[in-house]
Image (cartoon, rainbow, N blue to C red; front, side, top):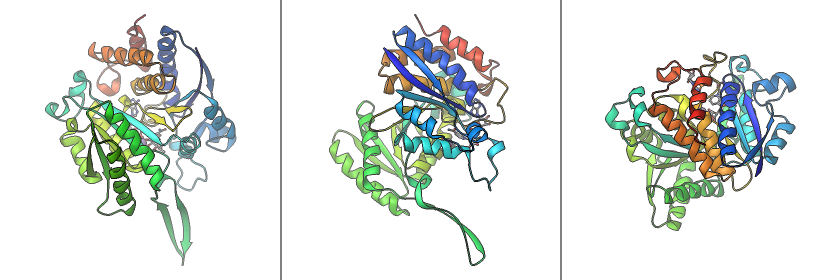
Length: 354
Ligand code: NAD
Ligand code: IPM
Ligand code: MN
């Protein structure tokens, strides 16, 4: 079995965590008899520096032709000028759109031995195991019109939150399918008391729910969801929501797990290659020090093996090795430990099994 994987290390700690995660991915695939060919491409700030654009046609074409794509992070202070015409983040958005990966799965599990690493009360964290399904190619991030203009001497800016029913249906269906394998409950998060797009979201979600009579549907307003996420997170199982709500709620959810560096993600479309990335950014405050937590990216490679390469055993090897390393007390700096990214990765590889 041969697979072609595109690597997009990106900026800041991106190359550090991708470099480590690739070692784990290669070892786990090999243990299951699979051979991976890697092709590294530029995206984000490093692509702007070389080509003047955050995503070249070449990078996008390579990703579209691959079996899967592993991305680190993009962005950083160097490219943060609000007047800049090109931004690293545009590359990531263009890639998600270009790969048509409309569903971003962000699993949030709290390892029992990391409960003390979270600022929340321990009794709230026991048994937390949820998955957030974030719509990824629509909503506020992509809606038109978008832009800036001067009207009567006053500058204004506009972003548009627009969804059509098909965009909603396909991502909500994905959430219901996931719920069939889990606790058979979907929490759909919206702002239907204010937003028209949320009222359409609710209508379509009710239609999808009728296709899955064994799954319970709960509608929740996003402000309530932000509160529930920290007040009673163990009651949540599958959440599905609009692009920006999902972005914000998953950074909040990362606090449950002890560190932003822990959370992986899988971005999937109807078919074709998946895109796999940790949910964190380029962490300019710790970039270049070799101390970033590599586990979010390592766990993203497990999702890559499961969802794109259909190698569930290799995926499970990685997830078990990460769990074991944490149970054995191994910690990077963000979790109160001393290990470097490389040392933590060595410990995971040592636990992959033969
Ligand atoms: P960030 O996620 O980069 O960092 C937030 C905090 O979490 C920082 O203190 C950082 O040190 C810490 N952190 C993040 N990942 C970590 C890890 N693996 N190990 C240990 N600590 C970790 O968010 P930010 O600082 O707001 O954004 C920095 C840049 O990253 C911005 O340019 C932003 O646009 C970009 N960004 C990119 C992505 C992406 O590429 N998917 C995601 C989020 C932010
Ligand atoms: C993420 C990031 C991105 C997003 C940015 C960098 C465009 O925050 O992957 O969560 O908002 O989707
Ligand atoms: Mn984010």
